[in-house]
Structure formats: structure tokens, C-alpha cells
Picture 1 (cartoon, rainbow, N blue to C red):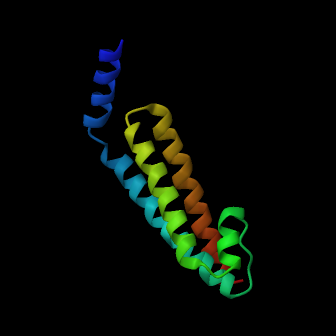
Picture 2: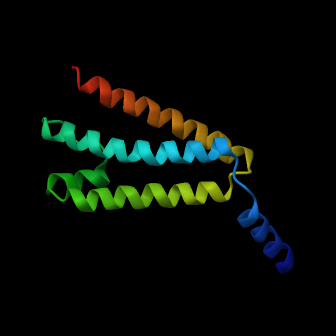
Length: 114
């Protein structure tokens, strides 16, 4: 039983990631950074942060710590997701995440003009 688990883990770590999946991962990572930058801009214009975890840092002016937490959580999540990139549900999840970040960036960009 243990040998089979080791073989499965080795298979997960050595499988190549599809280019489309890798592009999705890169898009989410970049969109997360842009979300942080846009959020900082909107906060400077009087908006409020809806994420309770980051709101505590933003309200006390600790932007560096907020960025590091957001960067770490996003990166860790993307690493875990990439381990399962061959799985159909991981591909569906990445599609949903990419769409969500796409809509979030559109929301931020429309905020510049309102």
C-alpha cells in the first residue's frame, strides 16, 4: 500500500503541466498582484477593503505585510493546484479562478472611470 502511494506521488511530481494550465497559473498570479495594486489605489481614493484578513492590515497602514500575505496565499494555492494539474477538477477550478480574476480586474478598471 505504501509503495503504491509513493508511486502515485512520484507520478504527480513528474507529470508535465499543459501550456494552457501554466498560462492560467501565470494569469492568476499576475492578476493577484494587479488586484493588490488596484486595491491600494482605490483605498487611497476612499474605498474600503472587503476582505477581512487584508482589511486589518490596510486599516493600520501595513501594506507590505498585506502584500506578503496575499502573495504567499496566492502562490501556495497555485502550487497546490499545479500538483493536480492533470486532474479534470483542477482544470475546471483554474478556469473558474481565471474568470473570477478577470471579472475582478474589469471591476477595478471600471472603478477608475466612475
